[in-house]
Each structure stands twice: as structure tokens, then as C-alpha cells.
Amino acid sequence: MLGRIHSIETMGLMDGPGIRFVTFFQGCKLRCGYCHNPDTWNLNEGKEVSAKELLQKALKFKTYFQKSEGGITCSGGEPLLQPEFLMEFLALCKKNGLHTAIDTAGFGKGQYEEILKYTDLVILDIKHVDKRGYKELTGGNIEAFWDFVNILKSTDTRIWIRHVVVPGITDGEKHIQKLKNIIKQFENVDKIELLPYHTLGVQKYKEMNIPYRLSGVNPMCKEKVKKMEEKLLSA
Image 1 (cartoon, one colour):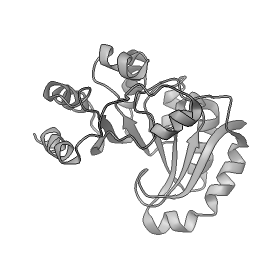
Image 2: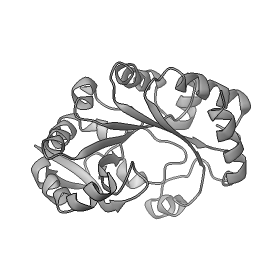
Image 3: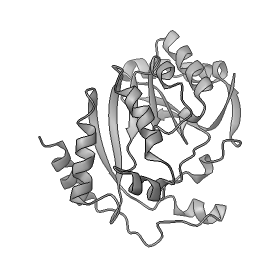
Image 4: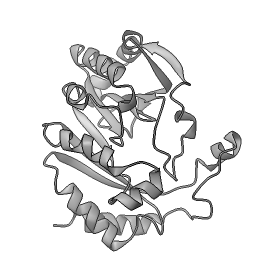
């Protein structure tokens, strides 16, 4: 089976434990106001590759994975938009003894139970905490996110939680408390990260002639985010 891949990072250090072979899948249905990769949105773009071809590229770095307890991370875009290809690739990775991770917003096309059978770690990006805010920030329906989450919660897959903190949008005390309540629903969370909003991807919007919806919003204060993270992690 062929899948569409935007790009590959062979020595990733921020996308799961250890050194990672990061595959950025093409395609995303969400239109997050702070997205820094609008060039991944169109599912019909990117390079076509087979799961076996992608695996062979990854296996060249297996020695590095084993030394660092790293592995494969499928990111995007949104990897869950290509479920059959994703499942085939993950299954091949597991057959070859590779640790697998999915970096996802949980907004895909289904087949989640089958995909999670071959997934060691889910890096879950929680975009917003309520229906209205989710719609305004991403253009999507939060119910689709919960469809994935409810299946994820029924598995023993390990989880990392990530949440982007945007001034005036996702930085309020009530918002963080709601986020905390959501996270409490999971049993297998190994790590929680609040990520400060930045504007490093704005230039891409100009180059692609796409309006940047958060124009005028300043980057989030990193020190404030640290304090918010401390509150989030407190009992």
C-alpha cells in the first residue's frame, strides 16, 4: 500500500523517547490557528511511498534507536487520516523490533483499535477543552477527538499529553483546570507538556498566500507557561 508523506526527520529528539525516525504524514482536516505546517494540510500532496520502502529507510538507523531507547514516530499533518497505510507501517515496525509512537490530535478516519495494537506510545495533542473553543481554534468538532480518546483509554498504550498555550485563548485558569480534569481520565500518562505558542511558522502563510488567523497575538511567555505547568501537575 502507498501512503503520502510530507517529509522525514532521521534523528529526531523531541518526538518521543530517545532518537526517533520521524515520518510526517501528509494531510490534516483541522485548521488550527497556530499551525506552523500548513503545507501538510492537503492530503493529495506529498510524496507517495510504500510501507516497506519507508521501513527500509528507518531500519538504516536501527542501531541509534537501540542505543538510545528510541524508535519510530508517525507525525504530521495527521497520521490517522491514512489509517490503512499507518497500520501497515506500524505493523512492519513492530515485526522488526522497533518502538512505535503516533503524534496525533486524534482527528482521523477510524480503525483506531487496530492501529493502537501496533502503537507503543501516543503523543496526544489536546487542542482545546470544550466544544465551542475547539471549533473556533481548529475548525473541527471535538466529538471526533473524543471518538479516538475513548478507544485510547480502553487500551494499555502509554500516553504523552501536549497542549499549546495561546495568550487569550488557552491560557486561562478555568481552561487549565478543565484540561487537568480531562487528563485525570487517563491511566497511562507518562508525561505532560504545556507548549508556549510561537509565531515561527508565519512566513509559510505569507509564502502560501494563506491568511494567518492569529495575526497580532504575541508569543506566549515561557515563564508563565512553566508556572501553569506546575499547577497542572500538582495534585
